[in-house]
Amino acid sequence: MTFSKIPTPRVDPVTGETYYTREDAMNLSPQQYEEWVYSNKTVHVNEVRLYEQKFWNILLTKSPPFLPLLFWPFVIYYLTTPMTFLRFMWICTGLLLWFPMEYVFHRFLFHLPVVGIRSQKFHFFLHGIHHVAPTDLWHVFSPVYELGAQAFLIWCVFNILHVPDPNALVSGLLINYIRYDSIHYLIHAYTPDQIGKIPFAGGYLKQCAIHHRQHHFSNPRKHFTISFVSSFLD
Image: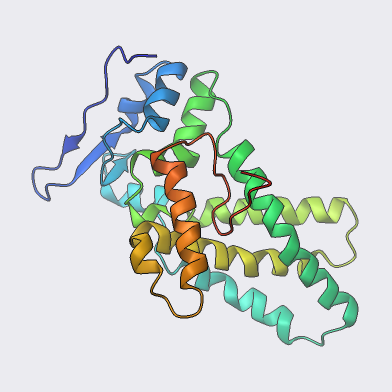
């Protein structure tokens, strides 16, 4: 696959930052778009600007690195309420359920096949931005409303399935989500050698960093786990 027109990074005349726009992605065919997003020859930029106004770009496409702190009140409430054995088991189930969910969401939702203009728009907003601007640390975390919608949808599914304590199950998932996205942030903010110097967990985190960097810069069709390394899944 070759590009009919390779998107060229734009340069902000004031800040000097490089960026792509919505038009850069949408002017490509679905096949060209996937090649552009996933190619290790693509020039990565500082950010993607979907909207002309900076306010809307920040509000709708970015999230501050302290986003996980917003979920701690919910988690702490469930950890400090009278803890029954059954509730404890559902929280632990949520903790364990996170690992296959992390892989499944990244593999099949964030990397869904792009077959038309609608799926192209959806993919670029959901995950394509992160691949062409991997150093944009304000796009490592999902926007608040997007993450809230995902959590609410999962909670609804648990209720439909008549899970005895869906709130406890979601609490377990959120605890591991906070761990996951904290690791994800470290991977994009620091080099593997820098991460390897973290006391106690440095060796493990360095392996996660190397593994995820292979996904971004070597083979985006593999290495879908982020906060853990699994030879069985990847």
